[in-house]
Amino acid sequence: MTATGTALPGIKGVLFDLDGTLFDHRGAADAAIVAWVSAHSPGHPRLAEVALLWAGLEGPYLAMWQAGECSVEEQRRRRLRALCQELAVPEPGDLDAAYADFAERYRQQWTAFHDAARAVAELAGLALGVLTNGAQRMQEAKVRAIGLAGRVGPVLTGEVLGGHFKPSPAAYTGAAAALGLAPEEVLLVGDDVGNDVTGPAATGMRSVWLDRLGVEPPPAGFPRITSLAELAPLIR
Image 1 (spheres, helix red, strand yellow):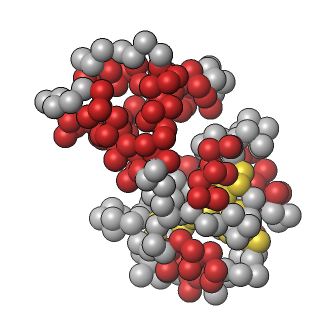
Image 2: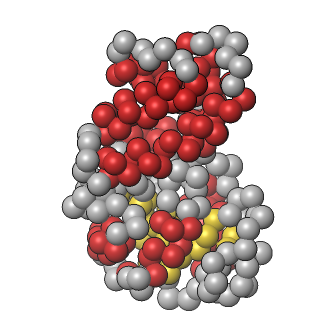
C-alpha cells in the first residue's frame, strides 16, 4: 500500500530512476567490492565493513564528477584510493587497472529487481524513460544487461541533459521534454528522497518514493510504495 493511498490521475509519462529502482546496484556493488578487497588483501580484518565503506564513498566522489571538478575516470581513482587508505591496503600502482578489475566483478553481478520488468510492461501506453545520475554509457549498458532496452524508453543522464543532474530542476524539465511532455504530466519513481521525490516537486513533476525496505515514513505529501508492483494501480 502507498503511504497516502492517493491515486495519481493525469499522468502521461513515467520516469524511472535506475540504480536502486530497476537495477540492484547496491547488491552488485557490495558483492564486487568485497570480492575485490578479498583478492587484493586476503583475510583483511575489516572485510565485513568494506561494502558499507565503499557505499559511503560513492556519493561524495560522484558529486565531484557531476560538479565538473574531475572526469568520471578520476573520481573512480580517487574513490578507490580513499578506500585503500581507509583500510590501510597498499594502493595499486595502476588505479585504472584496479578499478577495471572491480568494474568487471560489478558487471558480473548485474541484475534487475524482480518486479522491474512487470512494472514496465504494466505501463504500456505511457511515455517511459529512465532518469539517472550515472555515466551515460554505463547506465545504457545496465539497461541492456537487465533486458529492458527498448522497453523502458530513453536513458537520460546529465551527460545528455546539458550537464544537469538530479536534483537540478533542469534535469527534470529536460527529461520531461525528452518524453514530449510537460513536467506536471510526468511521474518520477525512485528510491532516493532528495533526487527522486522532493527534487522534482520544484518543477511541478509528481513523484513516488520507492522504499523497498518499508521502514521509513515518506516525506510529507508524497506517496510511498514498497514494490514496483504497486505503481500501475497507483497511476491507473
